[in-house]
Structure formats: structure tokens, C-alpha cells
Image (cartoon, rainbow, N blue to C red; front, top):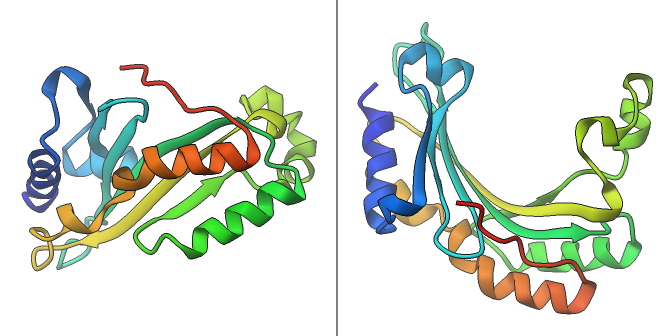
Length: 175
């Protein structure tokens, strides 16, 4: 259990998170990590950074936890256009430390029997795009993840570049 708080604290300290602009979220207990995860949200500027640890299954002899860093990237983007898909594909090839995510355009068909996507707060014509890095942490790797999860590092510069090519706007911190 100490692996998770220690890894989160290493990231928090390495990034020099300002406590006034961060909020701890979730439940650090073993059952809380399995059900909802634990970590922090941080607003260092225009981009919210969400750091979460989740897992490990209680029956594992060697606990392994999933550590995820998600960074706001763009909002109000029409992700249904071919041009956006082309730009996103090209951009993903240049970013080795994280992946770029948005809602798949097949969602309306997949969810049609449950209602409209707007019932779930999703609008593909005015969507969000985020960066994400994921690593699995165990006792032997807990100390080196702070430098490996770098989605936050490129968000500002790359968001401005993509926004210039395809529209959308910068997300503004809500913290």
C-alpha cells in the first residue's frame, strides 16, 4: 500500500505542485484504490492535470498499481472532421511519452439505445481532447515514474500549435 502514496508524492514533489492550486481526490485505502482510485488534480496554468493511482487486486501477492496522468489539451473541437483526424494522427506520431485522446466518433451509434450523447454530456462537434500517460507501479519501480509521465510538459506549446491548425480553444483552469 505504501507504494501508491510514495509514487504520488514523488510526482507531486518532482513537479513542485503548488498546494494552493491542487486538490487530493479519492480514497487511499486498499478498497478505495480498487473502486475509485486516489490522486490529485492540479491547475498550474491553463491546463488541469489529473494524477490517479488505481488497483491493486487484493488477491495479488505482488501488488501492481496503475498510475495515470491526464492533462487537458483542447476543448470545443469538432472531432468529426477528416482534417482533425489527420492532424491528430500526425501529432500522435511526434509524442513518444503520452497519447492524445478524444471521444471516438462511433459513440453515437454505440450509445443510440441508451439515448443521445448529449444526455451524457458529450458533443462531438464541440469536444475535449486530452493527453494521457499510463504506467504500472510496483515496489521495484515506484521511484522512477515521476520523470516518465510527462504529458503535462508539452501541453501548452503543442495545444497552441494544434489549435492554430484546426480550431478549438485552450481549456482554462478551474482550480
